[in-house]
Image (tube, rainbow, N blue to C red; front, top):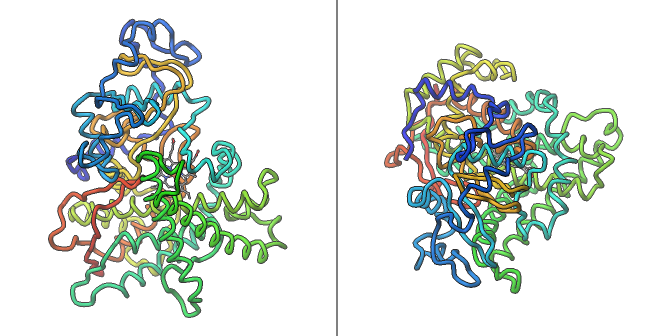
Length: 497
Ligand code: HEM
């Protein structure tokens, strides 16, 4: 496990790196003394020619007909199952080194890379047309992802949107703090199943940003409509089912193409629930705001509805994708951060002191502003360090768009590459830690997610001291469920300050 560096100075320095303003110093070719890129940033051929052949890249063996090297994910033969892929990836790195080749069904190679110098080469060489391998099961349900991104990203990138939403997001946090207090065990102060509780906060925050609606996933105020409360719960369950079905469909042998497997049925069920609920809220918003829609655009839904590029159905699909993509990434990042702070009381106290020095100790008196967050240097260090120790996404995919050389091996065009930015985070490098990906395919929820995590953690730490439940280890154990999730239910004690 990675050592905890919450107190280290180097972390603070690392966290001040702007990951999108990465140093663009050109990488050296290992075989010639010159840069491996020409003036246009393209990889030079002379370097490619001197590299070792693609088929000599080390990796698991043998590659069997039909199933390639996927036998390694049958736990009874290969020792790993689909929920422990992160262990398989880490073990392969230790066994084979910085570059590993595995073969999927039909002989398709997948290259895993672990060296940040190689990450840089892949990101630079694909920067004009960054593609990720399509998930065939998702492609069936959606139009082109990059096309959808082009239409949706502008609505998400308006920083004004996030600043304008701060009052509402502060109110959600206030309600959540009360909810948290109300569900704790009065004697022990313990709250059970932190993940499930935080997913409600994430859903409320994303629902408010996307739909301008509260999703009622936890009770607040007097007038809670029970059918809406049920919607919030159903949305979370459906998003959970979606990711667990992704994990199975992506890594298991694709018999779903021929017969309807359980994972495939789960995917369909999750999609239809998500779509049905999103449709209800989108329709409600359309009816309520039809008259003012074209004068104000302070939430994502209104901005999308004003886009001439998107029809109503595409707006609903975009909203489903944002909600499903956002709930658990933010939830897991929050769980990992709260866990690490609870396990490191000195760091938690230092963070509390920073919060008090900037916004005081009374959360009911003062609403946190975006400008306050940007002054909290230690908070940024804690969030970055938590991403380094436990990233919510196991890595980033790209498909090569031209021949390149990685770790001394030739890589042809059109090769899927899995960039393990979360496995080799120990090496300080501007490309080593990219929890939100990189370049023009970077996460479109990044700004919202960072703001939400910062705001929620400020409000929670300002109000409560966190302690891990007795018996929990200092380092959290994780499972791979397309995203990285906690391996067990986490209980935590909250103590009002
Ligand atoms: C801590 C929270 C989050 C993390 C760590 C995260 C991480 C990522 C990563 C690594 C990617 C792939 C980027 C690449 O290939 O370079 C991605 C893509 C994406 N994320 Fe996030 N994400 C988070 C939160 C969110 C939220 C809150 C939303 C929506 C509200 C969201 C929506 C998306 C979408 C739609 C894409 C696909 C973009 C495309 O296809 O171009 N994410 N995210």
